[in-house]
Image 1 (cartoon, one colour):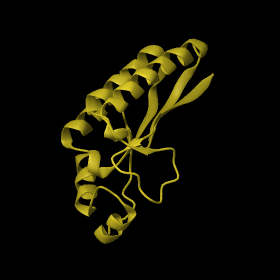
Image 2 (cartoon, helix red, strand yellow):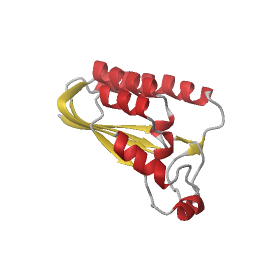
Image 3 (cartoon, helix red, strand yellow):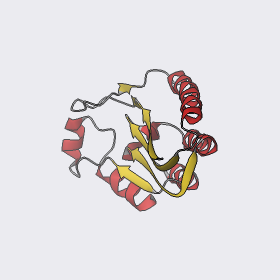
Image 4 (cartoon, one colour):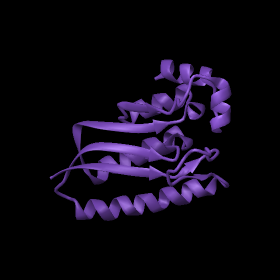
Length: 148
C-alpha cells in the first residue's frame, strides 16, 4: 500500500492574525524537545501498524516546521526513514517561513532528503507583511529563495 506521511509542527515564532491552522506561539524552547519526543513515539507506533506500506510523500507542515533547528529536522526525517519504507523517489516537502531559514539550515534540509520547499512568502510588500504579522521582510524571501 502506498501512503503519504504528514508530520505536524504546531509552533510559530508569532501567531499570524489571519492564520486558522492548528498553531501556537512558541513560549519555551523545551516545548519543541517535548513535542519531538512525543512525535518519535507516534512515528514508532504507526510504523508498527504500517509495516508493509511504501511511503511516497513526506510533508512537514505547521505551524512553522523550520522553527526547529536543521539538526532536529534532519534527525526526524532520518528516524522516519529508519521506521518506514520510504520510496527512493519520495517527494519530501517542508513548509518554511523565510524568517527562519539560513544557509546552514537549508544545507541540512537538503542533506535530510527534502526536495520540495514551500516558502511562505505571502507578499512582497514589506508594509503588508508587517500588517499580516509576518516575522520576515521581502529581502528575507529573496534571500531564502536564492539559498534554496
